[in-house]
Image 1 (spheres, rainbow, N blue to C red):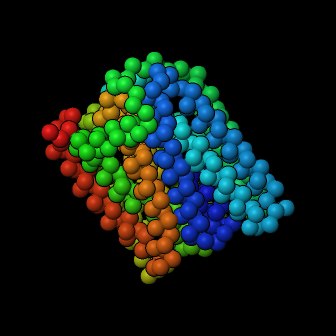
Image 2 (cartoon, one colour; image 1 turned 120 degrees about the horizontal axis):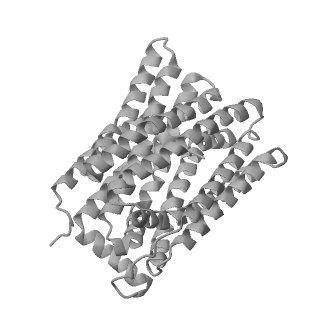
Image 3 (cartoon, rainbow, N blue to C red; image 1 turned 90 degrees about the horizontal axis):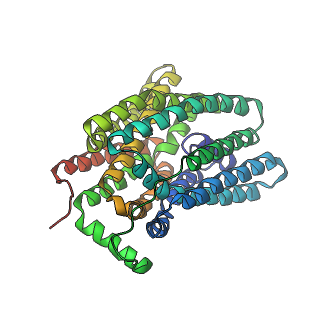
Amino acid sequence: MDSSTIIATLVYGLTGSAVAVGAASAILRYGWLFPQIFVGYLAQRRRRRMPFYMVGAFGRAACLVGIAGLLAIAGALPDALLIALFFGLWTAYAFVSGIVAVPYNDIVARSVASTRRSRMLAIRFFGGGLLALGVAAAAHQFLNTLTFPGGYAPLVLLGAFLLLASSISFVSAGEPVAPEPRTPDEGFLGFLREGVEVFRSDRRFRLFVYSQWLGGAVTMALPFYILQATATHGTTAVVAFLLGAQTAGGLVSNALWGWWGDRHGKRSLLEGVAVLRAAPPLLILVWVWIAGAWAVPTLAGFTVVFLLLGALGNGITIAMLGYLMEISPDDRRPAYSGYFNAIVAPAALLPLVGAAIVEATSLSGVFVVSLIAAILQFLTVRRLRTVATGGFDR
Protein backbone atom coordinates (compact mmCIF):
# COMPACT_ATOMS: atom_id res chain seq x y z
CA MET A 1 0.00 0.00 0.00
CA ASP A 2 3.05 2.26 -0.36
CA SER A 3 1.86 5.65 -1.64
CA SER A 4 5.20 6.25 -3.37
CA THR A 5 5.08 3.15 -5.60
CA ILE A 6 1.95 0.99 -5.85
CA ILE A 7 -0.62 3.68 -5.05
CA ALA A 8 1.28 6.33 -7.02
CA THR A 9 1.12 4.29 -10.23
CA LEU A 10 -2.49 3.26 -9.57
CA VAL A 11 -3.61 6.86 -9.12
CA TYR A 12 -1.60 8.07 -12.11
CA GLY A 13 -3.14 5.31 -14.22
CA LEU A 14 -6.64 6.31 -13.09
CA THR A 15 -6.19 10.06 -13.48
CA GLY A 16 -3.08 10.82 -15.55
CA SER A 17 -2.42 13.65 -13.09
CA ALA A 18 0.69 14.36 -11.02
CA VAL A 19 -1.51 16.49 -8.75
CA ALA A 20 -3.70 13.47 -8.00
CA VAL A 21 -0.58 11.44 -7.17
CA GLY A 22 0.55 14.15 -4.76
CA ALA A 23 -2.94 14.33 -3.28
CA ALA A 24 -3.03 10.58 -2.58
CA SER A 25 0.29 10.80 -0.74
CA ALA A 26 -0.76 13.94 1.16
CA ILE A 27 -4.07 12.37 2.20
CA LEU A 28 -2.30 9.30 3.58
CA ARG A 29 0.22 11.30 5.58
CA TYR A 30 -2.20 13.93 6.85
CA GLY A 31 -4.79 11.29 7.71
CA TRP A 32 -2.14 9.45 9.71
CA LEU A 33 -1.18 12.55 11.70
CA PHE A 34 -4.32 14.65 12.19
CA PRO A 35 -6.41 12.30 14.40
CA GLN A 36 -3.58 11.86 16.87
CA ILE A 37 -4.24 15.02 18.87
CA PHE A 38 -7.76 13.74 19.67
CA VAL A 39 -6.59 10.17 20.29
CA GLY A 40 -3.78 11.50 22.46
CA TYR A 41 -6.26 13.40 24.64
CA LEU A 42 -8.62 10.44 25.01
CA ALA A 43 -5.84 7.87 25.57
CA GLN A 44 -4.06 10.06 28.13
CA ARG A 45 -7.19 9.90 30.32
CA ARG A 46 -7.27 6.08 30.35
CA ARG A 47 -4.92 3.45 31.70
CA ARG A 48 -5.76 1.01 28.86
CA ARG A 49 -4.85 2.17 25.36
CA MET A 50 -5.31 -1.06 23.40
CA PRO A 51 -9.01 -0.39 22.58
CA PHE A 52 -7.96 2.67 20.55
CA TYR A 53 -5.46 0.56 18.65
CA MET A 54 -8.13 -2.02 17.87
CA VAL A 55 -10.51 0.55 16.37
CA GLY A 56 -7.84 1.90 14.02
CA ALA A 57 -6.19 -1.40 13.18
CA PHE A 58 -9.29 -3.38 12.28
CA GLY A 59 -10.95 -0.34 10.73
CA ARG A 60 -8.14 0.27 8.25
CA ALA A 61 -8.17 -3.38 7.17
CA ALA A 62 -11.90 -3.03 6.45
CA CYS A 63 -11.22 0.08 4.34
CA LEU A 64 -8.73 -1.86 2.22
CA VAL A 65 -11.30 -4.58 1.61
CA GLY A 66 -13.60 -1.85 0.30
CA ILE A 67 -10.90 -0.47 -2.02
CA ALA A 68 -10.13 -3.96 -3.34
CA GLY A 69 -13.83 -4.53 -4.06
CA LEU A 70 -14.05 -1.19 -5.86
CA LEU A 71 -11.06 -1.98 -8.09
CA ALA A 72 -12.47 -5.43 -8.86
CA ILE A 73 -15.64 -3.88 -10.35
CA ALA A 74 -13.89 -0.83 -11.82
CA GLY A 75 -14.75 -1.77 -15.39
CA ALA A 76 -18.47 -1.37 -14.71
CA LEU A 77 -18.14 2.18 -13.32
CA PRO A 78 -17.74 5.56 -15.05
CA ASP A 79 -14.22 6.94 -14.66
CA ALA A 80 -15.29 9.98 -12.63
CA LEU A 81 -17.29 7.86 -10.20
CA LEU A 82 -14.46 5.34 -9.85
CA ILE A 83 -11.96 8.09 -9.02
CA ALA A 84 -14.33 9.76 -6.53
CA LEU A 85 -15.11 6.48 -4.75
CA PHE A 86 -11.43 5.51 -4.64
CA PHE A 87 -10.41 8.81 -3.05
CA GLY A 88 -13.31 8.58 -0.59
CA LEU A 89 -12.23 5.12 0.58
CA TRP A 90 -8.55 6.11 0.51
CA THR A 91 -9.29 9.10 2.75
CA ALA A 92 -11.21 6.88 5.18
CA TYR A 93 -8.30 4.41 5.21
CA ALA A 94 -5.82 7.22 5.95
CA PHE A 95 -7.75 8.80 8.83
CA VAL A 96 -8.75 5.49 10.44
CA SER A 97 -5.10 4.37 10.21
CA GLY A 98 -4.06 7.46 12.16
CA ILE A 99 -5.87 6.19 15.24
CA VAL A 100 -3.31 3.43 15.83
CA ALA A 101 -0.16 5.56 16.15
CA VAL A 102 -0.64 6.99 19.66
CA PRO A 103 -1.59 3.70 21.38
CA TYR A 104 1.09 1.81 19.44
CA ASN A 105 3.88 4.18 20.51
CA ASP A 106 2.74 4.16 24.12
CA ILE A 107 2.28 0.39 24.41
CA VAL A 108 5.64 -0.35 22.78
CA ALA A 109 7.44 2.20 24.97
CA ARG A 110 5.94 0.69 28.15
CA SER A 111 6.61 -2.88 27.02
CA VAL A 112 10.17 -2.60 25.67
CA ALA A 113 13.15 -1.05 27.49
CA SER A 114 14.76 2.01 25.87
CA THR A 115 18.01 0.11 25.26
CA ARG A 116 16.17 -2.45 23.12
CA ARG A 117 13.57 -0.36 21.25
CA SER A 118 15.67 0.32 18.16
CA ARG A 119 16.40 -3.39 17.81
CA MET A 120 12.74 -4.24 18.33
CA LEU A 121 11.71 -1.80 15.58
CA ALA A 122 14.49 -3.11 13.32
CA ILE A 123 13.35 -6.72 13.82
CA ARG A 124 9.79 -5.59 13.08
CA PHE A 125 10.88 -4.08 9.77
CA PHE A 126 13.12 -7.05 8.97
CA GLY A 127 10.24 -9.50 9.29
CA GLY A 128 7.96 -7.14 7.42
CA GLY A 129 10.60 -6.81 4.73
CA LEU A 130 10.72 -10.55 4.18
CA LEU A 131 6.94 -10.60 3.77
CA ALA A 132 7.10 -7.55 1.50
CA LEU A 133 9.50 -9.30 -0.87
CA GLY A 134 6.76 -11.88 -1.35
CA VAL A 135 4.27 -9.07 -1.87
CA ALA A 136 6.54 -7.51 -4.51
CA ALA A 137 6.63 -10.85 -6.34
CA ALA A 138 2.83 -11.04 -6.12
CA ALA A 139 2.59 -7.46 -7.39
CA HIS A 140 4.69 -8.36 -10.42
CA GLN A 141 2.40 -11.28 -11.18
CA PHE A 142 -0.85 -9.39 -10.65
CA LEU A 143 0.13 -6.22 -12.50
CA ASN A 144 1.58 -8.01 -15.50
CA THR A 145 -1.14 -10.63 -16.00
CA LEU A 146 -4.36 -8.74 -15.12
CA THR A 147 -5.78 -5.71 -16.87
CA PHE A 148 -5.63 -2.26 -15.30
CA PRO A 149 -6.90 -1.47 -12.69
CA GLY A 150 -8.13 -4.98 -11.84
CA GLY A 151 -4.56 -6.14 -11.20
CA TYR A 152 -4.42 -3.89 -8.15
CA ALA A 153 -7.51 -5.47 -6.54
CA PRO A 154 -5.88 -8.72 -5.31
CA LEU A 155 -2.82 -6.74 -4.23
CA VAL A 156 -4.91 -4.42 -2.03
CA LEU A 157 -6.82 -7.42 -0.68
CA LEU A 158 -3.50 -9.02 0.24
CA GLY A 159 -2.64 -5.80 2.10
CA ALA A 160 -5.91 -6.04 4.01
CA PHE A 161 -5.16 -9.63 5.02
CA LEU A 162 -1.67 -8.72 6.24
CA LEU A 163 -3.00 -5.80 8.27
CA LEU A 164 -5.60 -8.07 9.83
CA ALA A 165 -2.93 -10.63 10.79
CA SER A 166 -0.75 -7.83 12.18
CA SER A 167 -3.61 -6.43 14.26
CA ILE A 168 -4.51 -9.80 15.75
CA SER A 169 -0.86 -10.40 16.68
CA PHE A 170 -0.42 -7.02 18.37
CA VAL A 171 -3.68 -7.24 20.30
CA SER A 172 -2.77 -10.76 21.46
CA ALA A 173 0.46 -9.43 23.00
CA GLY A 174 -1.51 -7.34 25.53
CA GLU A 175 -0.36 -4.16 27.27
CA PRO A 176 0.98 -3.13 30.68
CA VAL A 177 -1.35 -0.90 32.68
CA ALA A 178 -0.36 2.75 32.24
CA PRO A 179 0.48 4.94 35.26
CA GLU A 180 -2.07 7.40 36.55
CA PRO A 181 -1.77 10.88 34.96
CA ARG A 182 0.04 13.39 37.15
CA THR A 183 -2.20 16.31 36.21
CA PRO A 184 -6.00 16.53 36.58
CA ASP A 185 -8.17 16.43 33.47
CA GLU A 186 -8.90 20.02 32.42
CA GLY A 187 -10.81 19.12 29.25
CA PHE A 188 -9.73 19.20 25.65
CA LEU A 189 -9.00 22.94 25.60
CA GLY A 190 -6.78 22.53 28.65
CA PHE A 191 -5.06 19.64 26.88
CA LEU A 192 -4.37 21.92 23.89
CA ARG A 193 -3.05 24.72 26.12
CA GLU A 194 -0.69 22.23 27.71
CA GLY A 195 0.54 21.25 24.24
CA VAL A 196 1.30 24.89 23.42
CA GLU A 197 3.25 25.15 26.68
CA VAL A 198 5.22 21.99 25.87
CA PHE A 199 6.14 23.39 22.45
CA ARG A 200 7.15 26.72 24.01
CA SER A 201 9.16 25.41 26.94
CA ASP A 202 10.71 22.12 25.73
CA ARG A 203 13.53 23.05 23.35
CA ARG A 204 14.31 19.44 22.38
CA PHE A 205 10.69 18.88 21.45
CA ARG A 206 10.58 22.14 19.49
CA LEU A 207 13.73 21.42 17.46
CA PHE A 208 12.47 17.90 16.78
CA VAL A 209 9.25 19.37 15.39
CA TYR A 210 11.22 21.75 13.16
CA SER A 211 13.27 18.85 11.84
CA GLN A 212 10.10 16.92 10.99
CA TRP A 213 8.67 19.89 9.11
CA LEU A 214 11.81 19.85 6.98
CA GLY A 215 11.51 16.07 6.73
CA GLY A 216 8.08 16.59 5.19
CA ALA A 217 9.72 18.72 2.51
CA VAL A 218 12.22 15.91 1.88
CA THR A 219 9.54 13.24 1.52
CA MET A 220 7.21 15.32 -0.66
CA ALA A 221 9.29 14.02 -3.57
CA LEU A 222 8.66 10.34 -2.76
CA PRO A 223 5.61 9.75 -5.02
CA PHE A 224 7.51 11.22 -7.97
CA TYR A 225 10.53 8.90 -7.93
CA ILE A 226 8.45 6.11 -9.45
CA LEU A 227 6.99 8.50 -12.04
CA GLN A 228 10.51 9.55 -13.02
CA ALA A 229 11.57 5.90 -13.29
CA THR A 230 8.61 4.89 -15.46
CA ALA A 231 8.98 8.00 -17.64
CA THR A 232 12.69 7.38 -18.18
CA HIS A 233 12.32 3.64 -18.64
CA GLY A 234 9.28 4.07 -20.89
CA THR A 235 7.09 1.46 -19.17
CA THR A 236 5.29 0.72 -15.89
CA ALA A 237 6.63 -2.85 -15.94
CA VAL A 238 9.45 -1.73 -13.61
CA VAL A 239 7.09 -0.80 -10.76
CA ALA A 240 7.05 -4.19 -9.02
CA PHE A 241 10.81 -4.61 -9.50
CA LEU A 242 11.58 -1.23 -7.97
CA LEU A 243 9.15 -1.95 -5.12
CA GLY A 244 11.20 -5.10 -4.51
CA ALA A 245 14.41 -3.05 -4.57
CA GLN A 246 12.94 -0.59 -2.07
CA THR A 247 11.87 -3.47 0.16
CA ALA A 248 15.29 -5.11 -0.08
CA GLY A 249 16.97 -1.83 0.89
CA GLY A 250 14.89 -1.67 4.03
CA LEU A 251 15.51 -5.33 4.74
CA VAL A 252 19.31 -5.29 4.62
CA SER A 253 19.62 -2.02 6.55
CA ASN A 254 17.56 -2.96 9.61
CA ALA A 255 20.42 -4.54 11.52
CA LEU A 256 22.44 -1.34 11.12
CA TRP A 257 19.64 0.94 12.33
CA GLY A 258 18.80 -1.31 15.29
CA TRP A 259 22.42 -1.57 16.42
CA TRP A 260 23.11 2.12 15.89
CA GLY A 261 20.06 3.37 17.82
CA ASP A 262 20.64 1.15 20.85
CA ARG A 263 24.44 1.41 20.87
CA HIS A 264 24.98 5.10 20.11
CA GLY A 265 21.61 6.62 21.05
CA LYS A 266 18.45 7.72 19.32
CA ARG A 267 19.71 11.24 18.61
CA SER A 268 22.83 9.90 16.93
CA LEU A 269 20.75 7.64 14.70
CA LEU A 270 18.43 10.54 13.85
CA GLU A 271 21.42 12.66 12.86
CA GLY A 272 23.01 9.89 10.78
CA VAL A 273 19.85 9.13 8.84
CA ALA A 274 19.20 12.85 8.30
CA VAL A 275 22.53 13.37 6.54
CA LEU A 276 21.99 10.30 4.34
CA ARG A 277 18.57 11.53 3.19
CA ALA A 278 20.28 13.90 0.75
CA ALA A 279 21.55 10.92 -1.25
CA PRO A 280 18.37 9.79 -3.14
CA PRO A 281 17.40 13.20 -4.61
CA LEU A 282 21.02 13.90 -5.48
CA LEU A 283 21.52 10.51 -7.13
CA ILE A 284 18.31 10.64 -9.16
CA LEU A 285 19.20 14.10 -10.47
CA VAL A 286 22.63 12.86 -11.50
CA TRP A 287 21.21 9.68 -13.01
CA VAL A 288 18.55 11.46 -15.06
CA TRP A 289 21.24 13.79 -16.41
CA ILE A 290 23.51 10.86 -17.31
CA ALA A 291 20.66 8.92 -18.90
CA GLY A 292 19.78 11.94 -21.01
CA ALA A 293 23.33 12.41 -22.23
CA TRP A 294 24.46 8.81 -22.82
CA ALA A 295 22.92 5.46 -23.63
CA VAL A 296 23.16 3.71 -20.25
CA PRO A 297 21.07 0.94 -18.64
CA THR A 298 18.51 3.11 -16.83
CA LEU A 299 17.18 0.38 -14.53
CA ALA A 300 20.50 -0.03 -12.71
CA GLY A 301 20.60 3.57 -11.52
CA PHE A 302 16.99 3.61 -10.40
CA THR A 303 17.52 0.34 -8.53
CA VAL A 304 20.25 1.99 -6.43
CA VAL A 305 17.96 4.95 -5.71
CA PHE A 306 15.10 2.73 -4.58
CA LEU A 307 17.41 0.58 -2.45
CA LEU A 308 18.42 3.77 -0.64
CA LEU A 309 14.82 4.95 -0.35
CA GLY A 310 13.90 1.68 1.33
CA ALA A 311 16.84 1.75 3.70
CA LEU A 312 16.33 5.39 4.70
CA GLY A 313 12.56 4.99 5.00
CA ASN A 314 13.05 2.37 7.70
CA GLY A 315 15.94 4.29 9.22
CA ILE A 316 14.03 7.53 9.68
CA THR A 317 11.01 5.71 11.10
CA ILE A 318 13.12 3.82 13.65
CA ALA A 319 15.02 7.00 14.55
CA MET A 320 11.92 9.19 14.79
CA LEU A 321 9.83 6.76 16.83
CA GLY A 322 12.77 5.97 19.10
CA TYR A 323 13.59 9.63 19.73
CA LEU A 324 9.97 10.60 20.33
CA MET A 325 9.59 7.76 22.85
CA GLU A 326 12.86 8.87 24.46
CA ILE A 327 11.90 12.50 25.03
CA SER A 328 8.29 11.82 26.09
CA PRO A 329 7.67 11.50 29.86
CA ASP A 330 6.39 8.02 30.77
CA ASP A 331 3.12 9.29 32.20
CA ARG A 332 2.47 11.75 29.33
CA ARG A 333 3.52 9.76 26.28
CA PRO A 334 0.10 9.69 24.57
CA ALA A 335 -0.13 13.46 25.04
CA TYR A 336 3.36 14.05 23.61
CA SER A 337 2.61 11.81 20.63
CA GLY A 338 -0.62 13.69 20.02
CA TYR A 339 1.04 17.10 20.31
CA PHE A 340 3.95 16.16 18.08
CA ASN A 341 1.92 14.63 15.28
CA ALA A 342 -0.71 17.36 15.32
CA ILE A 343 1.93 20.08 15.03
CA VAL A 344 3.78 18.37 12.17
CA ALA A 345 0.54 17.39 10.37
CA PRO A 346 0.58 20.38 7.96
CA ALA A 347 3.89 19.11 6.56
CA ALA A 348 2.01 16.04 5.38
CA LEU A 349 0.30 18.20 2.75
CA LEU A 350 3.62 19.06 1.09
CA PRO A 351 3.25 16.38 -1.65
CA LEU A 352 0.60 18.74 -3.06
CA VAL A 353 3.29 21.42 -3.19
CA GLY A 354 5.55 18.85 -4.84
CA ALA A 355 2.90 18.21 -7.48
CA ALA A 356 2.63 21.95 -8.11
CA ILE A 357 6.40 22.14 -8.53
CA VAL A 358 6.28 19.26 -11.02
CA GLU A 359 3.50 20.94 -12.99
CA ALA A 360 5.29 24.32 -12.98
CA THR A 361 8.81 23.02 -13.73
CA SER A 362 9.53 19.31 -14.11
CA LEU A 363 10.07 16.19 -12.03
CA SER A 364 13.66 17.34 -11.47
CA GLY A 365 12.39 20.50 -9.77
CA VAL A 366 10.84 18.60 -6.87
CA PHE A 367 14.04 16.58 -6.36
CA VAL A 368 16.08 19.81 -6.11
CA VAL A 369 13.75 21.14 -3.40
CA SER A 370 13.91 17.77 -1.59
CA LEU A 371 17.72 17.89 -1.64
CA ILE A 372 17.80 21.39 -0.14
CA ALA A 373 15.32 20.37 2.57
CA ALA A 374 17.44 17.31 3.44
CA ILE A 375 20.48 19.51 4.04
CA LEU A 376 18.46 21.91 6.22
CA GLN A 377 16.97 19.01 8.19
CA PHE A 378 20.44 17.66 8.97
CA LEU A 379 21.58 21.09 10.21
CA THR A 380 18.47 21.31 12.44
CA VAL A 381 19.01 17.83 13.91
CA ARG A 382 22.65 18.74 14.62
CA ARG A 383 21.42 21.51 16.89
CA LEU A 384 19.90 18.88 19.20
CA ARG A 385 23.48 18.19 20.34
CA THR A 386 23.47 21.52 22.16
CA VAL A 387 20.29 20.79 24.15
CA ALA A 388 20.76 19.24 27.58
CA THR A 389 18.74 16.22 28.69
CA GLY A 390 15.32 17.46 29.70
CA GLY A 391 15.52 20.26 27.19
CA PHE A 392 13.22 22.71 29.00
CA ASP A 393 13.80 26.43 28.60
CA ARG A 394 14.23 28.22 31.89
